[in-house]
Length: 250
Image 1 (tube, helix red, strand yellow):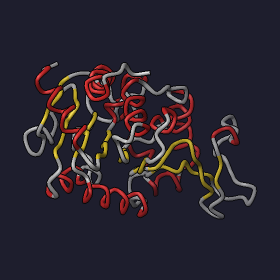
Image 2 (tube, one colour; image 1 turned 180 degrees about the vertical axis):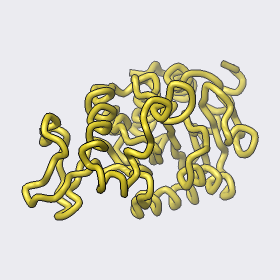
Image 3 (spheres, one colour; image 1 turned 90 degrees about the horizontal axis):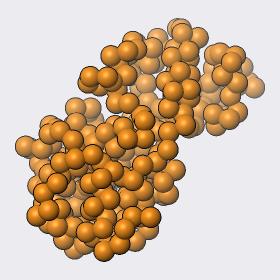
């Protein structure tokens, strides 16, 4: 990692009045959560059609079998890593004001972050499509699929399927944050998924400094990134936290 860039990022973050993070799948890879796209990604092994909204309603059993394996059997036990923890501790120290995430894994909340705007929903919440009653995964019998509510309605994970709209509240809060942000810490996003990827561009248009943490260059790197910190999210964020606070990450 470039020490000069790290110290520059730390200085910018310390001087910021309002900082936000924008996170994609790359921040959770070290927690055992695979990305959806690219080599070894989820869509190289599973048919994306199973998470299309209309397909889910027409074939709930088939879709739910994939959903169970992916989101509740396969990486349901994922634990927050040092990158998630660094963001939570930045928030606790008053140095980070919110996180906009494309992820649905709940790891930011698990790490202790409280102000998280989930662009694509959360796999740890489920909702009846009929009466809108909410459930947690612990309430669901995954051996009896597809799950149904007491009212008889089909239960669906409360994350965004293909063909489904972005949650309006999350979108509005994300846009408001982008308008206020002086600094954006961008971690683990390729910049390929819209409309989420518009948020860092909005922040840049409003004058924000973009600090990017990624293992490889992204769509953001040559277009809006000001400081590029190359490396794994956990290691980079551990070093950034120490450079900013003078303390080791807990």
